[in-house]
Image 1 (tube, one colour):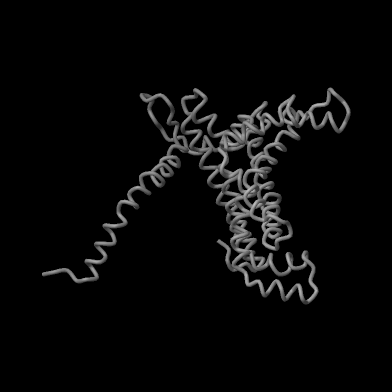
Image 2 (cartoon, rainbow, N blue to C red):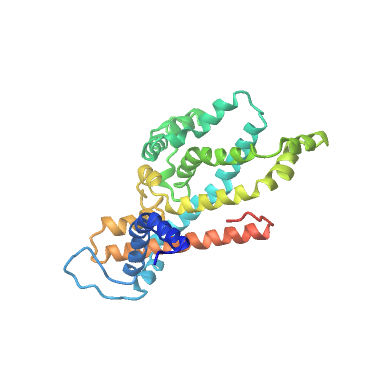
Length: 303
């Protein structure tokens, strides 16, 4: 007896999606599950060592480690810069280009987005040279202060070590968010903005009371992307400082990398897995907070 058309269609659909599902399970799901399991064991780099469950020992050790808290607060700085500085700058730049407040909008759009075409490692090395002891930043300080011995030695001091990284992040990624804002601005009905202008609204009022509420969904989506990117960001900071000097610029991904791949402890892999699980949990918490704020502010497009 032949199969019904519906069952044949279902079998065909399952056959078509099976390779993608298997690939996803093998590349994404399996490593995640394995990382969660390893976080509760003493699995290490010695292949012949017996593996045993140690419960929450790794997590207790993480939260008692002052280096973890240094990395955590540095990561919170990166998140704050990305959400509260980078995204507003990108939004304002997109609005300026959308309203054609400057000549050569195509040129400025290309220049702001250009860093996204440059290797992150190259950008990190570039900014490390700019802010090194005798780099261009120090020359500018000497020029404005008139003191030939003055230096912009920001990396040495824990209070200022993350500032160059914040500047590099803004320079590199603001263009990406600007493009997303600009693409959504171009979808707006220009008659709405024009009507507000005829009614006497200033550019600031149009931006804050007309455009910003209409793009609230895009704004919160970019915030979520910025949070996720900030917590997994590794290459730029590693290329700039490697987390140093003295852990002044260490962030959670570098903290995880150091334990998982650079230290010779027998539990390095399992401890690194526990750190990665903490990073994932922190990402989920921050994204849930973003969604909560989005719903409380009346944004129906929250992710």
